[in-house]
Image (cartoon, rainbow, N blue to C red; front, side, top):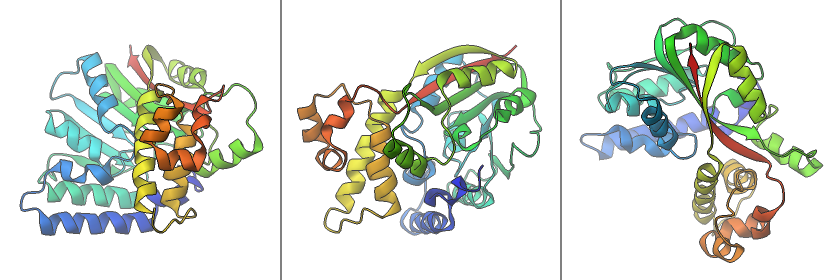
Length: 298
């Protein structure tokens, strides 16, 4: 993970304090906490487990298979996988995230069922012999193509890798304004679809499926934006990191919302439309999109 990217607030100490307070609140208010009680904080990517569910269904991965979640964050995907019958291991470069992942798992009675460990895949290889490897909103934080090679080396023959990630969609040069706010959201260059394809193919994988997931992530991003902007409606603070990143920049980037008319957008997302303009959705070229990619180790 780049040093710049690690300064984003959801990866920093202030957010860690928020999560720890959230954990303590669950301890105090729930007699038998369940892992889903943490869904609001332990799943940082849009659409929750929907993409992961589609992946498991597509590849027919048998229960009991061992799945490695690279960049596991707070461990939400690992707890979900364990709950439905898989063996899960999670690694992340941020040691305070691994501490919190273990703490949440302990609270919900899953501490002995999941292994979490601090590991930086850029700096070292991954030991193991896994049936599947996940990259969900992770490779965007790594400038090299090494993640695909790391996944290949720790997968069994016939194992599969699952990617869910942003890609650069706009073909024409970015405007100065677009460059500025996209860099605000993500410090490293965005890859194109073809670059993702080449990354995994060059590592030895056979690409099984590439699917657009842009509309799903956009819908999620706009609903999240509306919730955040409503939270601050009586005390607007547009320099607040949450408002700036997820109430303004994210819906501008994830603007695949043409399944609504402009009038429907304004009615359903009035605060978000006020921030970025309802007509923004209908511009000719999108900035970024989201893909789901499945690849197999032969």
